[in-house]
Image (cartoon, rainbow, N blue to C red):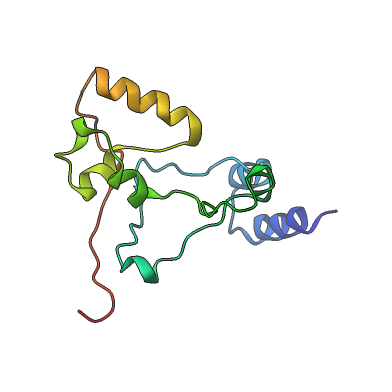
Length: 132
């Protein structure tokens, strides 16, 4: 018997979980849903930002002398946004647009042709960290 199943059975016997909840957990189904996501926008100085390296498969296919080894992030997409989105501030851009790799280029082309104000899918809260 797996540890997960054993732990779940223990919790059910204690009365901490209903049988339905135990089934949901074992099947990997969400017990609750939320329609808001949290987005962290790293706005510290560029030299202090942490970036993610591209995957090993992508790096192997690149030119060995290439310096473009970091994944593009939200701030990169914001600074290179199309002219039709030039009036958006960073907060609006971050809450209204998602980037998902290569297929996003098609979506940005569609935005240029048909400008609509999308509904924000994320909420943005401001937090000041560090010294000013």
